[in-house]
Image 1: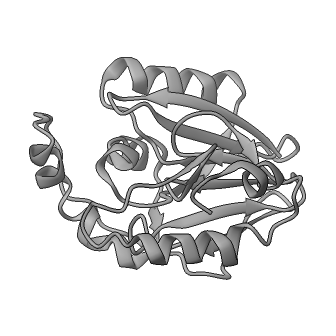
Image 2: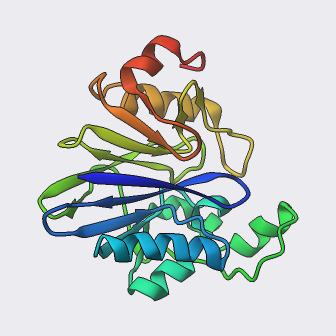
Length: 212
């Protein structure tokens, strides 16, 4: 599986496009676009590679990771896939923005396909395994692609850090437990693709992450 990263919006969120080079089936993970320029950057990439977008996935539903949901949903005819425990955040998107002083014409979002721990999605023949990692938010998930040896961790785990837990229904003890039991048990060579910042590996975080 191939993966490309875009950095969008004022929070510098990592939006990922995953695709199978044989079938050209693709997934957009955490669309963070906030304006026409960012929408165009994503569309141009998808058009250039002639991708067939089949999944719209949110690792969690904090505002910076779902700004572009409505656009992607309409543009590519997709349903929003996320964990149901974050529905309270998705439906509160306009108020999330107001609390950060952001004035954008946002509408509440709805999870249309629920993703749970142990679920599996496919791009072509390759698996995307859903791993529940609550703590940063109650519905945070990671996307593990074992054949390609990477995991998209959202805002649960970063290079040298972990997600903040001072937002609604965040819990630091829960997050650390999730990371230790669900992510640190992956192979050491697994590449971590986080929701912000650069990549790492499971092995590197075991050795150097001061939070775990």
